[in-house]
Length: 214
Image (tube, rainbow, N blue to C red; front, side, top):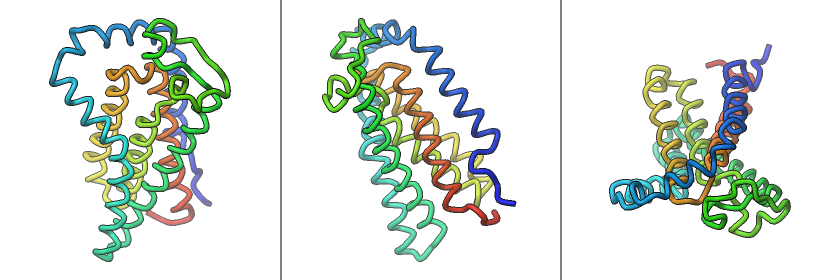
């Protein structure tokens, strides 16, 4: 019998992220205003860290995934190439999903709302940069890559996966935090994006290996 694409543990994660986004939405404005205070914005270490993490999300997630695929092909290591290819697929699929949702939802970005009104939506107008807040594209692709690489590692290198996967997700979370720091997204945008990226990455790897044994 084929394993389900979404085991109970993964469904629990997706559900928790969705519930979490709803729970923190009322605090979006408060948290955004707090992060834009001079206490944080004048800290050069935080500023440089946010720039680095943003780049790790985009274009970093795609560049890393494609590089792993190319390295696997050049080294003739099918497992490495598969991991890179599936992560690349996840990044691209996550990015397209996010773009579509941004356009439909049309949520105003924090900088456009000056951190005061997190509930301004113009449905179908998300093609405009000022209304492309939900979900966060950088966060989505970062979590998509983390989920895909983590899923691949868990299939082939269980011991390594226990160490590397948390690091991948921590980095992806840092990408999301950088978007909050840079006043580009509300906290709920980032949490929703994390859920989308996780779902896309895990699902594509599960589909690719469905019917195969570990």
